[in-house]
Image (cartoon, rainbow, N blue to C red; front, side, top):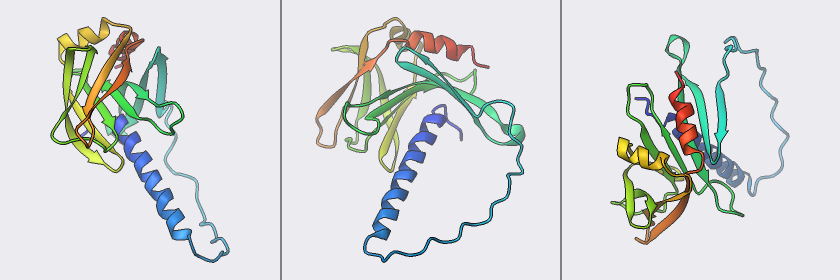
Length: 202
């Protein structure tokens, strides 16, 4: 089943596969004598025509991005969009966390999804808040893939309104593998505008 955070999952899985492939290749090459490169296979032009619409689009609104992509093939192709933010630590390669809000069909409720490293405690939740003692949403862990764990929850209207009504900094809190509370800042600047743009998508 296709989930509202399909784009986010695709990115996480692709990065994990690429990283694993690079590590495996490097390990396999250690200690081997140099060899002549293998002959490149003969390639033929792709027979599938290039669609008139772009495969993916992005638009920035403050610290949030509206990203859309095409999912499926042939008559089943559909456009899926979400608003997203990536949290990075200065001097560290790769994202520390990713957060996305989206849905598959217009009739579906919005869902909020967070992707974090695998250094998390189970059972626990990821908490989204705007003030030190005010929680907006609790996201349950759904699954882990190599290098990341994914939590999500349906975004209720009151929580959505609270997030849209602020333009400062919120927070996300989760427990690491040792049980400590880890608090990450979450910028809300541009979220309302990004959600407005998302609502206009067909």
